[in-house]
Length: 295
Ligand code: A3P
Image (cartoon, rainbow, N blue to C red):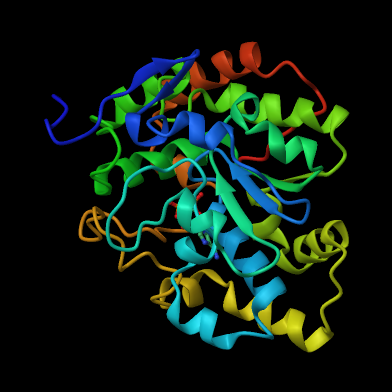
């Protein structure tokens, strides 16, 4: 299938496949001045970024500013560091730098080697969310079908092949999750968490996040956060379901699509699964980094 002319094209950027929307502002992004209390939410796309963004936003600001929750979409409360598009509801670094709230919650999909130096220099807290490759691939397939700001996925098999070859926006899933995992060995202010764990026991994962961030919500507050961040509640909440975002066609696929572990079983053929598993063994050599494809 041909890419439609209006869709952006991937190109090699220092060894990583990117589109210009995320590289046009490179100098400004690289020179970003972090504050020591900034909290970064880093993910490979489609790993649960929005879910964890909303959890953190509620933990930090849920009590003190209900208005924030009711009037500002989550992608404005937690701005996207490297995006350069401008337009209604899409905010840039200028907006991010002037955020009045403390801490600033900042989303990025950058591979670890592209993260602006200032974040490391200021010893900022980083939350990395990883999701198993099979479900990640399925989620990114449907997202690319519905989002005209990113390259078209083609049919399922061509998306599958591109994923294995690492020819995806923000590069190879395999490199992304591995390099962030390795970073943990030298940078202690990094909390590496898994989408599957969050699905399995949201409360337990919120406790771990709170301990990492030195937050101590009351039992009531935690119960409220757990309820707000349930898949159905986020899907029905106009401030978290991306319904106001331009460029997305929810008739093709909603942003909050299924929110489960194991949907890959509805997409992978037996042959694809074998090919995937063979290739996976070659690329994922670190025995300490283990993903679950079912729970
Ligand atoms: P699916 O496409 O598999 O449904 P990101 O925010 O990084 O773009 O990730 C989007 C994925 O996270 C989507 O996966 C979305 O449904 C899922 N997600 C978002 N909120 C969720 C929640 N509260 N519970 C479970 N999954 C959630």
